[in-house]
Length: 219
Image 1 (cartoon, one colour):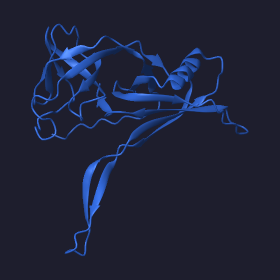
Image 2: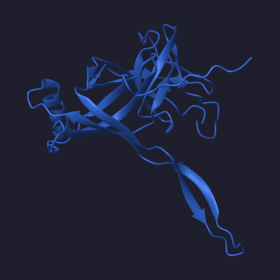
Image 3: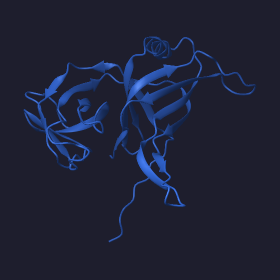
Image 4: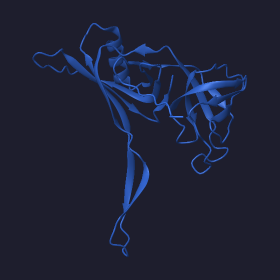
C-alpha cells in the first residue's frame, strides 16, 4: 500500500505568541521511552495542552510540547523520544512544566521565513591522514523572521514593542492550513524602524530567536 504523504504550505498560516505561563508543576520523574511519560502530581492537564518543559535534559529543555493526559498524576510528552539514555540519562530529565495559554495573533504578516537549525560540524585534521574528518557536533541557532504591515495604532504591535524592551520570553505557535502546529520558545524582538519602499506597503521587522527545539504536530 502506498504511503500517504502530507504537505503543508505557509500560505493561510496563523502565527501566535503568548506570555501567559501557568504556575510551574513539578515533574518528579520522566521515563526513557517513546513518547516519554512524565510524573507530576495533580497536573491538571488535558490532551493537546501545550506546556513549556524546563528539564535537566538539554534536548527537552526550553521547548513547548503537547501532552497526552494518562492519569491524574502522569502524562505523555508527545513527540519526545527519550529512549536513548546517552542523550537522555535516566533520572536526570526532571524539572517543571508550565501550561501555555492566552495566545495572541501576530498582526498583518506580509512575509515569514526561518533561519538556522541545520547541523553544525567540527573538522578534525589528524596528522596521519590527508583527508579531514567532518563530525556532527550539534545544531545551529534558530530564529523565525517576519515582515509586518506597519500600523502604529495596532495594540498588539505596541504590546510586541513592550515585550522587546523588557526581553520577555514568549511561546510561539504557528497553525498551518490542515491543522498542523509548530511550537517554539524564546525572545520576541520587534523593530521600530519602518521599511519604506515606493509602491509597497510600509513594513516593520519582527523575529523570534528560539532557546530550545521547534516541535511540530500534525492535524
